[in-house]
Amino acid sequence: MDHSAAAQRRIKAIQAHLISSVDSASQLCHNLTAGEFVYEQGYSVVLPERLHTGKWNVYRSAHSPLKLVSRFTEHPKIATLHDNFVHAVNTFRDNRYLGTRVRGDGTVGEYKWMTYGEAGNARTALGSGLIYHGIPKLLSYLAEIPTVHLVVVVGGMDDQIPSLPSSTGVQVVTHTKLLSQGCSNLQPFSPPNPDDVATICYTSGTTGTPKGAVLTHANLIANVAGGTVATKCSPSDVYISYLPLAHIYERANQVMVVYFGASVGFYQGDSMKLMDDLAALRPTVFCSVPRLYNRIYASITNAVKTSGVLKERLFNAAYNSKKQALLSGKNPSPIWDKLVFNKIRDKLGGRVRLMVSGASPLSPDVMDFLKICFGGRVSEGYGMTETSCLISAVDEGDNLSGHVGSPSPACEIKLVDVPEMNYTSDDQPYPRGEICVRGPIVFKGYYKDEAQTKEVIDEGGWLHTGDIGLWLPGGRLKIIDRKKNIFKLAQGEYIAPEKIENVYAKCKFVAQCFVYGDSLNSSLVAIVSVDQDVLKAWAASEGIKYKDLGQLCNDPRTKAAVLADMDAIGREAQLRGFEFVKAVTLVHEPFTLENGLVTPTFKIKRPQAKQYFAKAISDMYAQLVIADDSSPRTKL
Image (tube, rainbow, N blue to C red; front, side, top):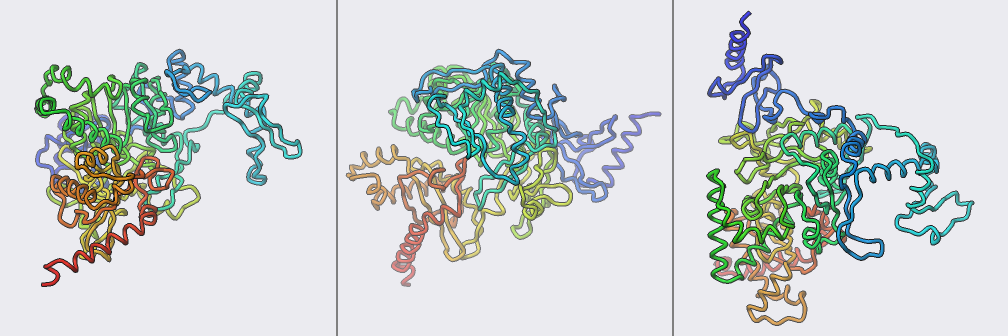
């Protein structure tokens, strides 16, 4: 039997009946063993969701087009987080694992390290110590007797721990004593199964109450396995951990670090001292969020502008030369790194080879800036708690900015029409719609909330993300809108505030920005948390005197200067007329976790921000009404 001829006949049959959009049969590839077909699109491949519909709308990674990744290819027996850690302890026992700078007395010094072997021993001792105190037995009764029976004090001294009356039934022990008790009473492991719950990870809560996403060991292993198909680390890599460990972005990064046997150094707990931690640790891998990258961008560009004419010209020449070389696929001259960019790289320790951005969109300008100034690979990813983290990421060698790459090998993606927003898969030149995800990375549901689970996971197993995307050439995904975080102005224009906030984030005065509007008003207003250093420098240059930052923020001249700079940035980004804010309120306090205005990944909590700044928003609209009533155009 001629298998080649049979395969060609099947290709022609499929092409004739299913895909009218495919221009060339050469793009349709067959797999002789599986007998399946895909349509190549560069970084992605496209498959039909159902053969009888004739619609090729399901995108997968070109790295694994015919089977979704659920385990690490090199170590398929790693099925749980327990397996992953045991593998790391056995393989990298003497390698550095956990590093901290903060000493027991609160002072800060050089990083001190715990090896994988030491961490493995501590884990065994800790678990055995808990069993020694009867924790497994107590857990079985917690539903009936929700009472604490054991308090473990980390960092305390045994002779300083108070004892509680025996009648309370509560024991208080130090962490050190618990480890000692565990070492003296070692117990065997009770490993989890892949489908067991690994964590209940709460969503950021940007639009309401946070929801508990139930994630299994299999979910997390599949996600990290998919993400590491194309992005590899090694035991020599050093990762800095400063993002909240309660967030899925950092949790997945930690699983990845363990798998590769890399080292992770924790920042000292103060984000204002992060640059000092970076200089001490000298990481090779740096994962962050756009807020910090925007601050780095603004800090460097502002320093260049105030460095003098010659230094500014040298920087611009180096920047433009390196940018042109990267865009044309050539190696830039090393002279520019020696003269200009190595000094900038030193700000992050001088060794960073991989920078990753996630949690919210990164401006293409900032992405290009990071690639040019810091060298190495800069990637942007897209994901969410409900998918155990990563959904898509920019592939290595892809120099196009402004998108979030191709699907992770551990999932498949399709776009679903959103007719009320005029987004359809038939849109030209690019298909558009709500991003839906399916695969082993999708969570099991929201904790004790079946109703909301059914709202996001349909009968076909597709998770509806609420994000609007389009497919760029090459099978790259671009996020363009959000179903939930949009509103209409009085004239009916749809507003996506996060997109506008990302534009204004490049304004030199802006540290953080909250854009607000509603259907009762015809324009947007904004609350701006100012960059204090930039504002003080500007006031000095203008000869403006002030008692404190509050007075400076309320000065009409300051507001006018900030609004003018925001307008210039908006025009540069080609915002539409109704997307420009018409009034600003300046505040010197940042949006923080403590005041409840941002999530752990620094996304603005919109309902909370609206309530927090209600008076300022009302005052701005009142002022706009007065200004509009007094304008000559209104009087005419």
